[in-house]
Length: 139
Image 1 (tube, rainbow, N blue to C red):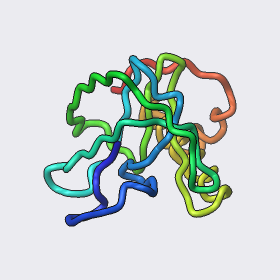
Image 2 (image 1 turned 135 degrees about the vertical axis):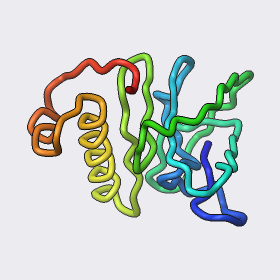
Image 3 (image 1 turned 60 degrees about the vertical axis):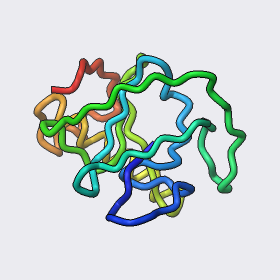
């Protein structure tokens, strides 16, 4: 599930900060996925199979019998990359060309998310990042 980074046709094979082939098994019923919008109009694309991460570019996809989606626009919740609110809590998805890059992106996304949800500055978010937190809905 994702949107293009710029106008035109794009492959959905690679995940990007605007979504795409995310393959995150934590995105289950009751989850909300937040994606930044890269182009006017959004141009959302949705696929029909879900794996769980791809280090080598291939995953075992899991077909879904039924998917119900509710699409909405949040102009009050700025993000730089995909984040999700799941029944288990918040997730910041890490995407990158290397495992280190993906880990850094996930950490940066979670630090920014903590700042947004709690109203903390960056140093406070970093200092409290490793503590378990319970966060409610965005806003």
